[in-house]
Length: 620
Image 1 (tube, rainbow, N blue to C red):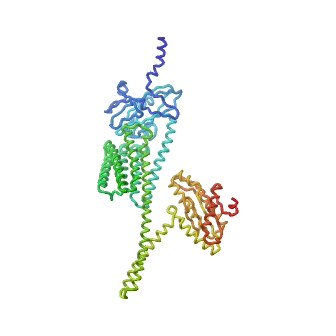
Image 2: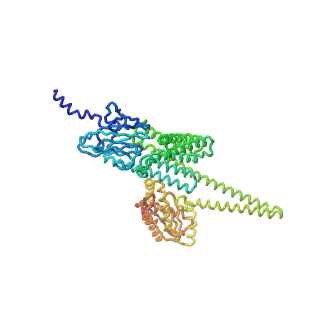
Image 3: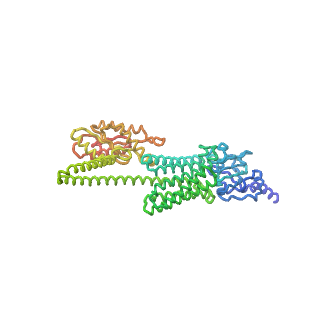
């Protein structure tokens, strides 16, 4: 029994000595090595690898959590991790450090005697793998056990945020991550271009401040995620370190300007303006510190000013909402989301919240939600401006009516006064007539705007109804054939769902331009509603209408809508009716017949032209 016990102890000795080692994963799984790590704190940062390797086991402490996070402080931290490969072959693994802003990271034991040295305060080409994050390749033979030492030191958050996975699992995760990052930055670019375009049209500075806020926030995220060091300034290490608090403070400054303008704080009580001035002064101070150093106060200052401005903006927005400023409701929601996301990001950096995919990207998610809410709020302002324009038009009409009444009274007075006052009355009348002409011209311009569709520039449905009545009356008198075409973009909801409503608007505008290029100057084209258009063809019989309809359908199919470096394919269903009007007031009836033909075209599979045939439709 004694010999057997000794043999059992001999067999179990390797397993007992490596009981705390981490088994390397296989497949698509990834492992957080934090619970398997031990650390030793080096406040002075002067210890070398030989000193650390000779430390007794009692000097090491268990990390004891999913991520090795030690907050802010500037000390050096040594970590050791035992791994073993229980698999019959070597798959090739990577240790991914998810904190691109670590100043220095050294790794021992990865590849023989080579030392891995990287970090955002070391040239980018030092890295063994060209990647925005710190990627440590690891090759462990079948059954092999190995100890890895890591040394990290940073003036920012000492958060390792590490995960261990196979190379195949990393490649799969990287593809998904790049897709999500592309969508995130693409959404920011779309918001930037859209609001900058609105600024170019309206000259409303709120859209300019919002565009700059979106751009600076995207710049901040580009730095935080490691893209900037990889692609923009791989060797400008001093600027890279200062660029992070600089971008944060710059986004904060534009956020203050945007909030000040959109909440109309210049019309609010003085306390609001005083608070805004103080916050802007503090933000300029942080910008100066970020440009000229030192780094740590600038970093802490950027965190403090972001938190202070977000909370102040949230409180001011609530107070403005309570005071009756209706638009503040959406802004309150947006600031609440951003405050929550920023707080979670800061707490993750201090180690109070554990590292996870959610906490890693929480500020991106919160920022995107907040900017989307702000975009909706800005769109609501456009609607309010349109309503104000309609109210102004109503006031002009009322003013014109009152002026006409006044003119009538003066003309009546002219017949009653003496001949000596005749010249005076005429001068007064001339002045009034000039005013009325100016008002009439303004009213005509407003009326013409009301006749057009705001998106495509085509005639709207109300104008279509008016022109149809006139066209059918002319055709009835002259006994000429006319045709009405009802055009509908196929599966347009799928375009909106797949590419977004801005892409849908671009497709409507594109289709309208293609239609107008094929029509004659005497023809009429109008947007009937949604994705439906109506074309009225003067002096056109059934054969000519069918030929033109096929041209319209084929032209649109051959010319997809260009949108954001991609082509969106479109197809068209057309229903038409042609003939010589036989009775007045048949315009609505002809529209109905063309619509029934359109319905038949869509029921037959779409992307086709169908003319109304009374015999065929009665059989159906």
